[in-house]
Length: 385
Length: 206
Image (cartoon, rainbow over all chains, first blue to last red; front, side, top):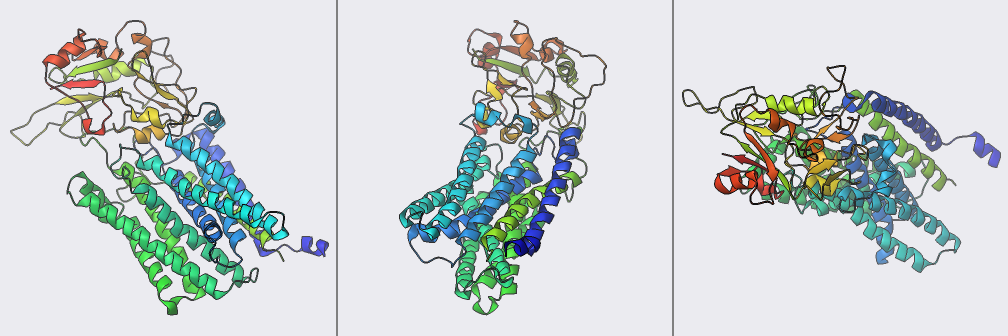
């Protein structure tokens, strides 16, 4: 039996191997970026962050849903979503690894990473994030280990419940701290708002739940798990609710920015009709359509639910783009013209201050594939019969 | 002690000499500027303000504001950018910088911090300026240091020495008798983005 299992690879394992190969190719491109210089990217002095930090925010968010969906029912002692707890936590672990990968590829001096631990400056939100993400990753791994332990009777139910509560708090903290990297910076009008923390949590819940939903539907279709439709419906309703909260927060922020008709109006115009409008409207329309699919019972079919989840994930990615590029789009001092090869790149698209280059897309693909490989190998093991 | 600079906008000719002086004093690589001259009128060189015939020409120079409450220092995860406790100068340790560019995102003064996006390239085959200037490193952030290598020897920053209009003054803002404190006390001045609460140490006489 063991021998035949070894010979025949499951589709998940094959996907994992393909992802590993892509991740390896990504490492090559990362090395090219480091040796030739980050001048090969689209980032410059006036837009000092780009696709990598956008994806960092996005993947930190994606990792939320999994952990919250599996730990919330346990923490509050309410009925869960069927036997998907371990799968959900594993999506969280994979996405956290990808998020950490994105920070590393963004660094100019990854060989100096050790300094983060030697010279930690505890007043920096970036340092807070590094601490909280490390704790989050370790906790997720302990949580999945405890879930197996509970099944075997080695870990008590109470211990698992306590662990779930701690994980839930950490998950909320991780997203708040990631928001504070941006939200505490008075330098950018768009970023500096107290709403950013809660808003990051709500966006994380949207895309994280959507990811778990897609994974659950796909695994069920492939016959790897058995999951009652009522659990899918429960998650769908939850997703719809999260989307509404996220859109509500966006509405609050737009209104607060625009109403005084001061400098905040410039931010709203940039989003609604300016260079970031394509991302803004993709998010708003995508999320609205996803919410309709989630709320109308007759539309809750597997295919459509996968579409709704994908729309929600794309919508939240567009939000991350708006936040990052939008922050750099408006300069604080109007009349200045910081020019030269290191100020901004010439190859910007649609009036955006930043647009990624080919090497950034390749490295990004590599990091996503790293997360994908971890996800596929893990799911293969978890759902093996 | 808190070093600061006072720039008399009425005396500035817009000649860009300070920009060049800064580059040569600190041996700045090609394409890197720590100090720039802008005009209120627009992005092109010497753009006048206003519409014909009511035009005027005014300039201001822009470099690190050496804030008393610097946004960059707080966010650096490894403390590579720090405020010198003795002089109040905001400094940058190239050997420590991990290249995360958080300080650039946090600084409200658009464009004063610059990152070496590739191996530093130089127009000249030899280094210019002061011997004590630390070597520029790829993938690290740098900016105006108030010419720390010069002020620590009791000299004044390079931009100030070469200014033909004598528009720049440098000294201790904490000493009420210093030339800079006297100018601030007697002349009308402004600072850049006061609403950000950074309390910059660069004053512009208007």
